[in-house]
Length: 453
Ligand SMILES: *Cc1c(COP(=O)(O)O)cnc(C)c1O
Image 1 (cartoon, rainbow, N blue to C red):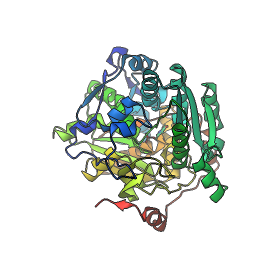
Image 2 (image 1 turned 60 degrees about the horizontal axis):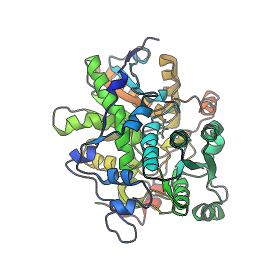
Image 3 (image 1 turned 90 degrees about the vertical axis):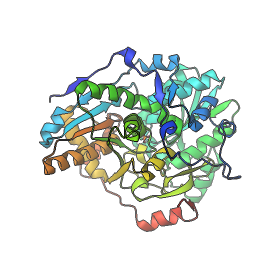
Image 4 (image 1 turned 90 degrees about the horizontal axis):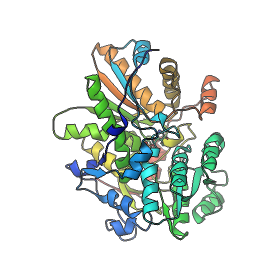
């Protein structure tokens, strides 16, 4: 096991996030108020999100947005994160490719989610908010926001997708240890939850349903805001610290990535690792490929349609122009809970239309095979979500071997899997299943949405 780390000093933590929308030639289409079909304004968004997040969401002009000092101070707990040359993995694959990964698993909660949880909690504090609601899939976002809200003295209620609540009880304990209230979703505590439980009593939940519940609670609680851990433009903005650091670290290696890979749930860690590199494609200076790796059981980028769709199951959010499987889509219970989301976000959707982003879909067993190989080669047990990026990186490395070509691969290790060992147990026992979504399911879920031609 021989890896090489490229480390930055604390003072090299970026001082500004990169706002890709300012430099996109074709801007993402506007998000719409579902009643009036008018473009949402900062004032509209502020009924749900903080003012700062609402402004960032719609900011199409400033390429750089300053990171507040209080946020940078918190980032110092674990940032800058290491960039690692995966010699062990290269050797096991016997590939001519050079493989690098950015290790976001070193954060206190074990994933990249803290990069956005901290600024979102900070803005709540600054704007005098006292209560926050959110949803969480596998529990990673909930854990990150629990830590961040506690630091800034805020109360947090988390709706956790029921299947994960039972599959990953330790993530619930982590959130409770940080002092958050955790509710399995769907629950009887909201109208949206009661409606779905009445129709389908055994429903195991989805991110879309948990979002509906969290939004409803935020709307009915005084001085309360809602915080989202992915999908939205402001979340992608905060995650660009990943790629900005990686860019400096790649310069230290003397190489530049030919392909940048991230796993894809709502798109935030993919945005984080790729947008800072993509800006050099916009100017024609570089021709890097960007690959989003999604599960075959939730294939919005590879098989979804470009539509105006809701971000949640009940239809409480604005309408967003994005690749989607339909907001009623109910993904199979795969272990990569953080990737079980029906839509792709507006920025990445536009970048895919414009040819800057490619997507691949990967079956669950291939991701666990890749994860196991990576653990044995590099010593880190990856999150089931991150294993999609690893599997895609391995495909690229094997392709390089077939073609006998040198290639530089960079992927984001979005989190570790030490709290996902029941999933590994199932893989070891040979009990994991693959899921392929029938074409009719996608068609029927999308029927009735406004297709964007
Ligand atoms: C939440 C999560 C993801 C998926 O979310 P994105 O917004 O697409 O990044 C991926 N990996 C890990 C470890 C996560 O916790």
